[in-house]
Amino acid sequence: MRTLWEALGTVVDPELDQPVTDLGFVSEAVVVDGHARVRLRLPTYFCAPNFAYLMVADAYDAVRALPSVTSVDVQLEDHFAAAEINAGVAESAGFAGSFPSAGGELDELRLTFQRKAYLASLDRLCASLPSGLTLADVPPSDLLDAMLRRRSALGLSCSPDSPLLLDEHGLEMTPLRRRHARSVRLSIEGNAGFCGGLLRTRYLNRSS
Amino acid sequence: MYEKDGQRYFIVDGHIHAWDGRPSNQANRYGEGFINCFYDYHRNLSPASEVWPIEDFWQQSEDRILHDLFEVGYVDKAIFQPTYLTDFFVNGFNTTEQDGAITERHPERFIVNGSWDPRDGEAGLDRLEALAHRWNLRGVKLYTAEWKGDSKGWKLTDPWSYRYLERCQELGIRNIHIHKGPTIYPLNRDAFDVADVDDAATAFPGLRFIVEHVGLPRLEDFCWIATQEPNVYGGLAVAMPFIHSRPRYFAQIIGELLYWIGEDRITFASDYAIWTPRWLIERFVDFQLPADMTEYPPLTVEAKKKILGLNMAALYDIPVPALDAVPA
Image (tube, rainbow over all chains, first blue to last red; front, side, top):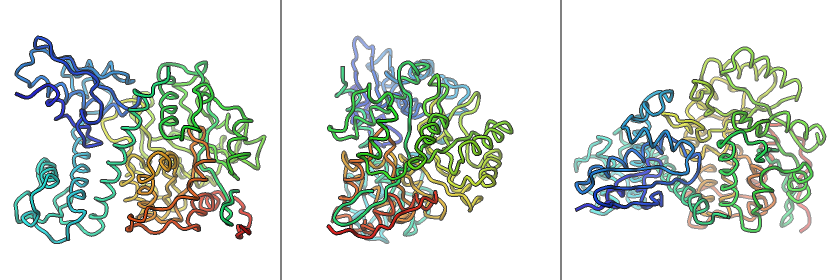
C-alpha cells in the first residue's frame, strides 16, 4: 500500500519538474489514527503563490486519496499568502475561489510548465542521440520513460513510428527549436539549483 | 576602472539601489518579508567573506555606497534603478527622489532612472514628464508584476503602456529596464512571461529594452525573444553572483546569452546592495567557460570589456576613456 511519503512524492513543483519530497519542501508528514498532517515550506517568503497553490492543492488531493487516511490537514508555512492558500485548499475553493481578484484558475499556467518540462525531458534523453530517429529507434531507459510520461500528458503522439523530436505542440522540431529545448532544460535545472540553495539558506543556516 | 593582466576594463554597474529596508521604514509584514528575502539572496549567493550582518543590509550610508562601488569596487559609473514599493515601506523602498539626491551630489558617478505605471493614466503621464525634467531621465525601470487595486499587473502591450512608451520617446528616455519579478499578490499566469517585451520592442524600434536578470527564471524565453529583436538587451543583475556559488550554471547562462544574443547586448550589474561589485568584477575577468562546454562562443577579453561597461556606456552615451592595454 502506498505510504504518505510516496503519495507526496507524486506532487511535483510545476516550475522545477521535481517531486516536492526531493526538493525538501515537505517539512512534516505523519498519519496518526487515520489523520494525516502535512507541512510544506518553500525557498522564499515571496515564492509565486500560484505555483504554491498548485502544490498545496495537489498534496491535499494525493493524501486524501490514500485509503488509510480519513482526514487531512495540509498547510503551507512561512509564506506571505499561506493563510489564503491553506483555507482555499481546505475548502476546495479552487485558486479563483481563494483569490477572487486573481482572474481565473491555473490550468493554463500548469499547461505552460508541462510543456517546458516535456522539452527539458526530451533534451535530457536526446543529448547524445543522432537526429532523425523515431520513438521505436530509442533503446529503453529511465530517461525515455520520463520523456514519454510528459509527452503523453500533453496528448502528443507516443506511437513507435512517431518522430522522436516533436515540439510541445506536436510539430517536428527545427534545429532552432531543438536548440531551444536545451535552453529550457538548462533554465529549469538552474532554477531548481537556485531554489534548493535558497531553501537551505532559509532553513538550515538560519542565524539566530 | 579595473586592470588585470595588462588589460583595462571600464566598468558601468547598470543596476544599483540606495534603499531603506530598516524596520522603522517597514510598513507591514510584506516589507519585512521583502528585505529578508533580499537578504537570503545575499547570504545564499555571496562568498562567506562578503556576507554582511542584517543590520548592515537594511540600509547603506552614502559614504558606504561610494566606498563599495567606487573606492574598492572599480566602478566608473553606476545607474540607480528605483523600486518604489510604497505599499510595503512607509517612505518607499528606493525612490527616484532618494536616488536622485545622491546623484546630484555626485553627478560624475551616478545616473538616476525614473519609473512609471500605465495604470496611472493621464495623471501619470504628467508625472513622468515632471520626473523626466526634474532628473534629466534617460532611462526608466518598470515592474509589470506589480499589483494595484483590482489590477493583477500589467503588460508592456497594454494601450496605456504604448502611450507611456511614446512619451518616453518624446522625452528622450530611450532605455526601458524591465523587471519581470515574482508576484507580490497572486496571479493566475506566469508573472515572468517576457512575451510582451517582444511586441513592444517591435513597435518601438527606437527604444532599447533591457530585461533585468536576463529573464531569470525564464532565461529560455528571454533568449528566444531577444534573439529576434535587435533592441532587446540582457541585464546580468542576480545572474552575476552564480559565478561564485554555481560556476557551471553561471557558465551556462553566459554561454546561452552569447549563443542567442551575442556579446554586444549583455550588460553587467551588481544589484547593489544585494551584492557588491568588487568580487563580481574580479571573478568575471578571471572567468573562463569550462572546456567541455564546446557549443558556446568563446568569452574573450573583448567580450568581457563590452559586458562590464562598454555596452551600457553606449546605451547611456557615457564617455569612455581609451582602454589601450597597459604594461603588465
